[in-house]
Length: 335
View 1 (cartoon, helix red, strand yellow):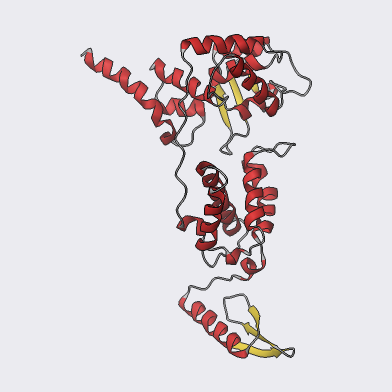
View 2: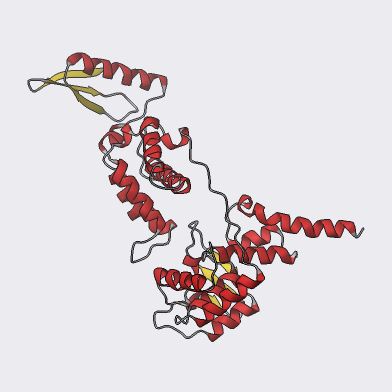
């Protein structure tokens, strides 16, 4: 049975002690409210649907994000000294707009409003990533921190913005020739090696910039990436051309293969693209170029492509399968 007693002049204190459950307490303005709360909680305990929401009622999203950044992120995301990772920006936006809310107060209506407000300012894909980050943070709170969410994870119950179409920008022969010329003409000696390595290995920009000499095994033609975008380590096979590029690079004191800042690489890459007279071409498009070239060879299966690229699901590689399908059709025509 619950214990209801007066607390001070204007408040009532309710406490429930039941075998098999942690004691719970709550303070109300009226005795009726305290009694009604106690009846509901005791009924939930009897029916086996009770969850202790006390911690979610006293923990803000901002506090949970701080724990997520400190305890979870370092083991699952790339962590840079300049704090410029995309996941940090997502966390910061969530803290700015929802951080003051207690976890127990986060519901579908509140998250839906956040979605609509953000869509007025940024692209669908950005909001989609922020919502998935919010969902991951709430799951961390439930699974890792043991914080019960009485309303469940509201992100799972709302509509997400549509996923942006995958880019498939590739340079034609003339554009590629101009682009190569301008990259080689750059005053930054690491631009062209970075571009070549991206095309030869299919590595992401962040993976290339974080690549260390100590993680390259030239005898086995492998590059080890201890931390990648999806939070998992992977080993990338290196082609003879990639090994030749690495062999020609000077060794930096800090151990990085490409000792250049992300924004520096962005600016020199963009400058080369502009000088070449090319529109709508980004460094990430080089990864698409690399995987397209491998698919066009016809001697790599989709599983092998996934192993090289680091994609966790084959769904992400569907746009490359039509290239292999054309080769299969040609083989069928020979029989």
